[in-house]
Structures are given as structure tokens and as C-alpha cells.
Image 1 (tube, rainbow, N blue to C red):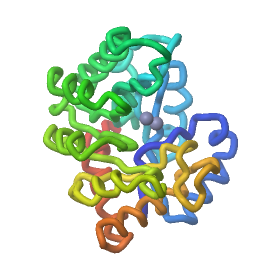
Image 2: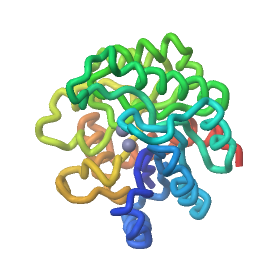
Image 3: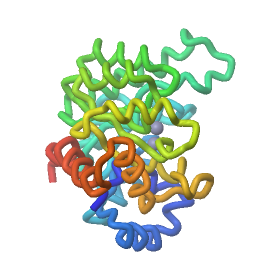
Length: 261
Ligand SMILES: [Zn+2]
Ligand SMILES: [Zn+2]
């Protein structure tokens, strides 16, 4: 059985065909999923997915790319984090990929928001779901400054260097691999995946985005996460069943150990 540790089932293209997706998940041996929140406005919908389905859990957080919507305080996050089946804070982090002409200096609001999430995670004793893109030095630096290692968590949809993976592992974080691992151009990422210890690996789809080969370009769903496991297994020279088992145990240890209900 497989776990999708990061998906966006509240997004309309997935939410409107949830019954089909759940049937596809069951047929593919994907028995659990973590539904990720990206805005405070979206939280009730994400939380409803977790509340209404025994095999779904959810996070609370505001994505670094979210602009012109509610800015969360530590209390906003903590109040929602107390609800049943909320098992993580995020997704949060830094994304300097789409600066749209702005300097790093002008992205201070992203760094402030990230600090708010780390403080909430420490206060709630919940793990962090970290999104980092073209910003790994600041991401690691802020985590160290804020004691993020105490909260622990996962660097999701990992695409950074081995040096960043090592810094994340040293802070006690897990590394999650997505369908990108199956892309032809991802040689460097496969080299990183080869070196990340299996007991720190998670797998995810980040659906509806980033469908793995052979579905690349299509709408992704949690039912495709076994293709990520298959690729990780090939890289490590082990059976996909071993990856399925290990990543499921890792998921339970990281997220379900902290579950309140
Ligand atoms: Zn992300
Ligand atoms: Zn995401």
C-alpha cells in the first residue's frame, strides 16, 4: 500500500471527480493521502476532505506564492491546527522562482510568513511541509534561526541540490520525491534520491500537477504515486514493495504520531 504525502484534492479539477479518484486510488493500492492547504480561504474545503474520509488527513498553511489573500498570524494557524485530522503546518517556505522583477530584498514578506509558520509548528508540535524553490539557502538559514529542526517535517517535491538535501536531513527533515523523479531531464535529482536514506524518504504526487511518466502532461491524481515509488525503487536497486512499506512507515511516524484525534 502506498501513501501520497502531498496532494491538492481541494483544487476544482480534482474535487469535482473525487469519487473516481478515490476508486482509482483503491485500485492502485494507494490507501492514504495528505491534503495540503495553500490559503486560509481554502482551509475549510481541505479540512472537509480529511473530516469526511477516514484515509485523508490535512495541513493548514499559506503557500509562499499566495498573494493578495489573508496573511496568517501564528494564532490563525494554531486555531485551525487544533481541529481533528490536521497533522501538519504548510505548505510554507520560500519561492524565488517567480520574482516578477522583484529583488530578494523585496521578498521579505515571504520570509516573515515562513517564520510565522515555523513558530506555529513549534507551538502546535506539528511537522512542517516545506516548499522551497530557487531559495534553498534562505530556507535552510531561516529554519536554523527559528529552531525549525525542533518541529521537523518534510521538504516536499524536492528538486534542490545534494548539499540542500544534506542540510535538511541534518535538521531532522524528510525529503519527498514527486513525479519529477521520472522526468528524463532529472538526472541530478535521481543522484540525490540515490543518496537520501530510505528511512527519510517520502513519496508524493503534488497532484493535480507534475504527473509522472507515463502520464506526463496529464492531470495528476494520488492514484499515480506508485509510479514515483517504482522510480525511487529503481534508483535504489530495491523492490517497489520495499519503498511502499518504508515510505508508509515514514509517513505514519512523521505525521500520524502527532495526530490529536
Ligand atoms: Zn509546493
Ligand atoms: Zn503543493
